[in-house]
Amino acid sequence: MCISISHPDMEVKPINKRASGQSYEVILKAPADLSPDRPQSLSSPPKKKDMSLDDLQKRLEAAEERRKSQEAQVLKQLAEKREHEREVLHKALEENNNFSRMAEEKLNYKMEVNKENREAHLNALKQRLREKASDA
Image (cartoon, rainbow, N blue to C red; front, side, top):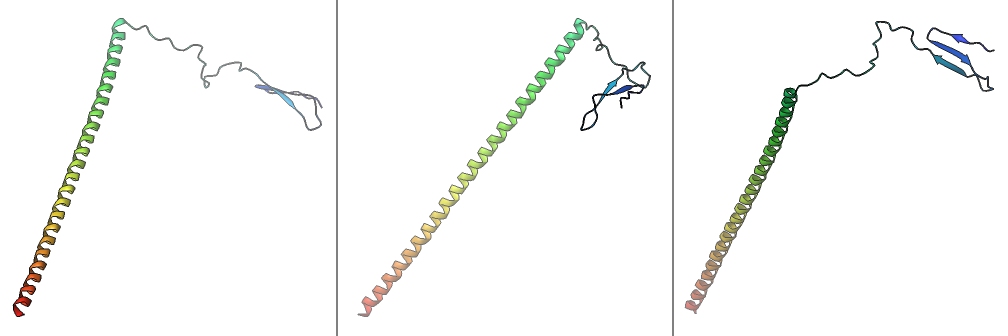
């Protein structure tokens, strides 16, 4: 069975019949006319209008201004970051100094209390010793 099927946009032709099935060749035809609902293909990209020297100069100045603005923004962010780092470091040093001062005060207080307790204990022992000596 060797039938060729034609359609307005394509043509289907059978190829050698095989034991596993059949194979076909499908040939697509180019559209004959471009209807208004189909977009027309562009043959070349739209041409840019010629720019005057003033326009080019303005564009270059605008690009330079954008570059300077971006650079200033980056520098501002870096300065803010450095200032934040300084503040954090200052706060950490202050907290460390406060902790050291409080630890030293606490240690001095404990040493003073121990000294007073020791003196009171020694005075009590001396007093008992005097009482025993006077009783004997």
